[in-house]
Amino acid sequence: MGDFDPVHKPKHYNVHPSGIEVIEITEHFDFCVGNALKYIMRCDHKGAEVQDLEKARWYLKRAEARRTVIHFDNRVALTMERYLQHEPAGGFVEGIFRAVVRFEYARAVGVLDAEIVRRKAQ
Image: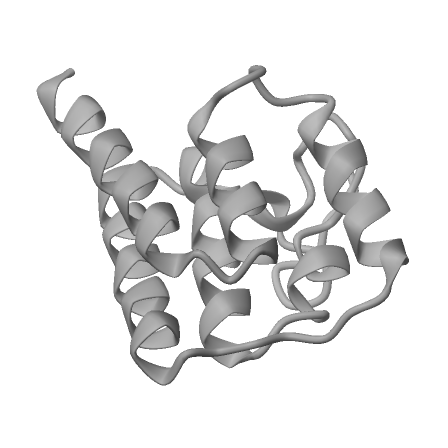
């Protein structure tokens, strides 16, 4: 992990213990959902976690308003499952991933809202 390039391999995009880069998941979604997931997946690695989660919320609300439906194959689902193996079971990332693949954006926003409140209280 010592080698990184701020353009092609920024540290906050590929520090997850699964070894999965953010783009390996986000590129399978539309712009709004992909951006929301990007902000969620890297929020703990940039020093502005609440702000990143609030940005993710904004994008999820936009996806909800647009009634975004994404068509993707099982490879992305398997990649997301591999990613989740390195996240706390029942944690907010899992809740959001599971809601997004079912197009339940309001549920994803609710999970995100609870996480934002929790982090602001810390």
